[in-house]
Length: 219
Image (cartoon, rainbow, N blue to C red):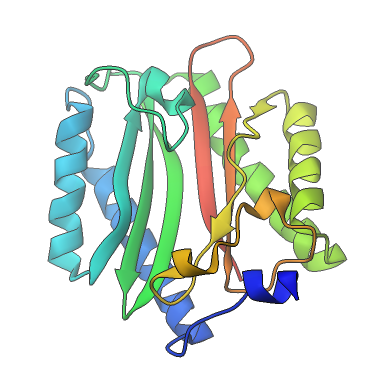
């Protein structure tokens, strides 16, 4: 019963609408990434994101817009950025968006690199690689949420990165998902149902002060 309660949905919930919200949120991530350029302040990128959201006709945001530059890519969602950094010519940034479309919650995040820093590019790529491997593990084995994050930590280490296990994924659904109090995906013992959970991967470079982030809907 506990697992069923954590995977409950509201009367408006439709899986196709979750997929629509997923696609629309990715549209914003990609459009914003194209507008972020060296010399821009982190706060300016956040403001520009709100412009994109309004241009694309969102219902509302359901969690604050998060754009992190440089060393702030090591920060977790609940941590404040240090200062208001300006994006350098060779730099790394990520975008994390939670947006409601058609009364359903989209949540997407990805890391981008400007310039020619090979380690930053490798770090950004690794977050997506680990995500893809964990997603495939979920599809092929039916592993529970805790097992998925154990696997994620193993894969990150094998690739030479550190997985931030303070970030463990979470529920989404028809708005608002928060009423279900489902906790973190990484603490959920059962196999997560499709269309209800966000898998989050946050990596850190083993020695340099930057990281990467990727999240998407398990569907």
